[in-house]
Length: 163
Image 1 (cartoon, helix red, strand yellow):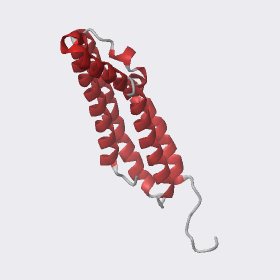
Image 2 (cartoon, one colour):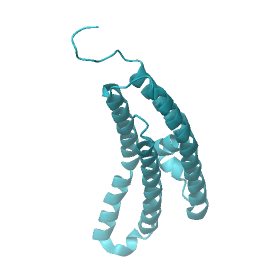
Image 3 (tube, one colour):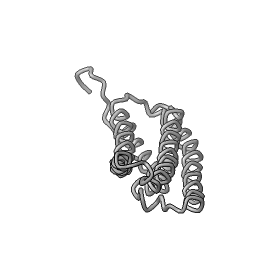
């Protein structure tokens, strides 16, 4: 984590892109689903089985978010750090606090416009993903606090056989 702001910003961007991609693909799929009777019996069965796949994305998004955070926390515990890096961590945190709310607000605006234009309540269809994306600044603050603790509040791991 030693001042690797680009990785955290990349993670936030990827979460944002994934949520918007799911929203757009769900919109396209709902348009096809409305006309499933025009595809015949085999086409209707394929479209029905596709509906089951879209129900999984909410849980998959939660698993991705949890996995990324767990990976950050676990890897930060094994990184040897010096207390001088706390200053870099604080600067990185300041940059992250400017970027993360921006993406959360963009997501909220995208969902609102999606609901108005498509007439589908995306927040109702994917409540867990919507909760994560709207509360991303708070969840990011919690993750950064845990990272701070795991980076700088661990015992000295020298491996030299003594204190």
